[in-house]
Length: 377
Image (cartoon, rainbow, N blue to C red; front, side, top):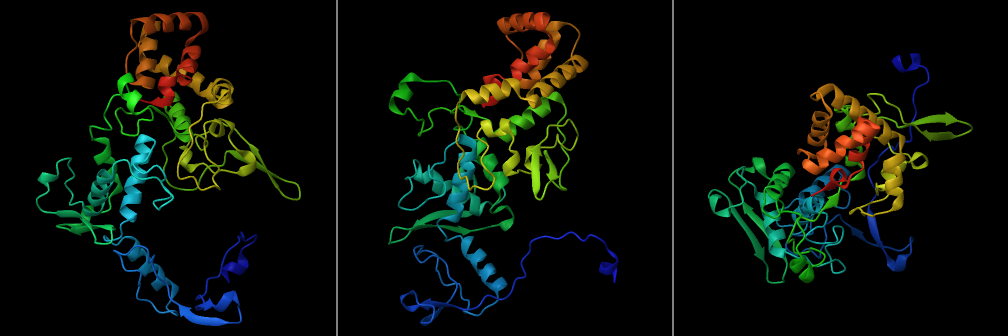
């Protein structure tokens, strides 16, 4: 009765699920020639983890999904923990220990540091709640990477406490507290002559922020970043209808629009030119690893995009409001906000001259366009 009272009930494309029918081996691919029934199972190529899920051909779908999930996170599965550890490593360094994050098979790259990948995977699965870079301090947990006779390895764990296992946040912390992550980005010609691509991590390779992080960082500098969490996403476009829906990109200075980019709805026909120029991938395309290009279009968007210009102006307004009086005080405060450091003597002199000639907005615009702001070193 309540439904009958409603008007204009929203409609959506949906699926009415039903129990899947049994699957058969088709003799010579003929639909009319059914062979044996096929039961759900894991990958038989992974020998350390049995592919038998223990489900019948007519078992409920929920039961099949549960058995598959258990197989995926089985500590003896040699792939899951390694793939995840490699992905997290890639996010921090720009390149994984295995350079092909979607392919750990024969067609993929070999790991540059296989023992490190094994160790990270074992720590990820077997954490006992006391993560440290010194394995000798882990007295209450037994960690091992076993090598089987057929050459396949698996992660074995006898946990003292399961509360910290499979914790991505602690895996991030472990990597970021390492000496490798905390290296300088300083160039070394001798090391570069041996390893020009920095595959063996003789320095922390500078990498540009992701497109979404650039946008959010600019909003943070202007003081307009909306940190509201949860709820529906914001729509950076308007919708008009003429027989079908048309989407037009919008750039508004509203709290909803200034939410973090993770809450942005992406539409194919209303792409953000700033994000797209900074290699933001198509949301409909699987992208295990983003590209990082250098093009003239990026410079043009960063200089002329209406969003960037507005954030530069609002950044200057914030500096004027919060900093000490005087041009030098304003310059120093802008540097500390954007770079986390004070300007040196030459930077202070040149920046003060720019503010005197063209205003504080010009300096803030230059900061948001600078390499130091856009790159992690």
